[in-house]
Image (cartoon, rainbow, N blue to C red; front, side, top):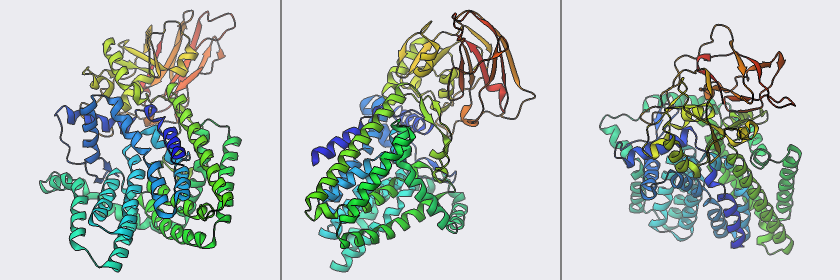
Length: 595
């Protein structure tokens, strides 16, 4: 049984090196670079809802890893890999709570692909919520059964660290308070132990408190408004709970389809199989197990869900960490009763479910590796950042997020080029990535856009369409190409010198007068790239309309805000006259080049 749990954890962690560098992770790594270089000593963490800041504990933890390894790749991979600890922790907690079969089922459930699996792709500090939540619950269980000041102190410290990872972990306070109350009712209060635990829990917040005491400000001015908005949102609790339930049900098909690459029907079929196995296990469990799990589920999930829906108007995927820990645990308790009672059929069913979870986790990890190697993460802002709209899923767009395992190699390769500017998907990545690859090897960060024919790097899926003619070095998920002509320079954007968040958006995104029209006489074999240097500011911009010698020419490939046009005549690309037309906001940030 431990070997199966280890296999599930390994399947989950296998994709950690292929987490993608993007805005939030790049900001965190940039801060870590500044700490290691001695240029910064942050007293607060990320800003939430533009009103409240967390403590800086995870900034400094990443800086410690970076200082010890000297590697951006190792630092980013370590953050994602820690998330996989949730699997052995779920097994241990379930075993302590109700036996090894409950532990196995909990580990299998928490490893299923779903919304929480996106933590592997995006590598954010909220991914620490799940392992810390399980560690907190383990300490609570030990406190109730065995007591001890160490258990209380560890529970409070784990709660504090989890809340620093993301405030949605505050729902764990319900379990900590319940554990303390049960222990004290049986054995009397332990005020010195409570004081010790509270003191340890306060440590991660100490820099923030010191900054506030010195007048540094912690962005707390908007907290009353946030609280008032949350109270208003609680009035919408029934509708939000229905939306949350729908989002959770759709999480597994989404994970299998988007991460694992399964067709829609196959993904739905796997989800039905998972639900059927759980239903059979639940029916075979003893009534007392079902009743106990039902009460635990009703109470814990109501508190968890209320906290989630009150947090903000939308429900991003990274809000579900603590919620999924509670839900998967309640399901494990409800459904593992038959196996725990010694029934052979129940044990075989739990074992089959664990093997199925291993297969699905492996499928999801393989999908992440495949898509990230191609530089084609299928990005759709909805539903990822608003799960209440999970039922209507727009077609995702391939998007370049270089895999973190290649960050150091990319920095060295690009630094050797000495380019002063970056174009196409790489220019767009520069806008979101702060140029930390260059900073990591001590090189000057280029600008995005402009008329200088600097560095053009296409993700591999676009490079396969563009062909090998003129292709240069292949590093990570990108292939470099020399630029022939810049026919329309995009406006220049200078990356920030400090890790401001978000990077300053371009001042002008107003509608321009009339469409952007460019006419190009192509030489034989010449390919055209149209790049939107501020794609995240308007992700729904349609691709350009194009005509080659008066016949429509659709884009051959796209990535983020970049589109590739290739002549595909049967006699080979003999050139021609290409006309492009593009409408929308911020057209001064559109660049057109050939390679």
